[in-house]
Image (cartoon, rainbow, N blue to C red):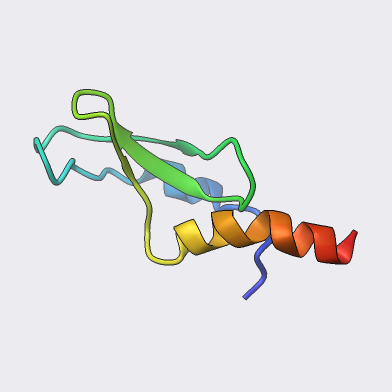
Length: 68
């Protein structure tokens, strides 16, 4: 898996509902490392990551340091 691959802009079109309150979540690029798209619910202050995205975020700085 390429951990530095760009996030797919098509993911911004997905419509996910909050598992806590059922409202539609906001979908946006995560501003930190890992190149992931995250979903969040402003009402519940809940952030949603898909499978493997937290791992990509956590590993990105470590892998960048090893390659730099």
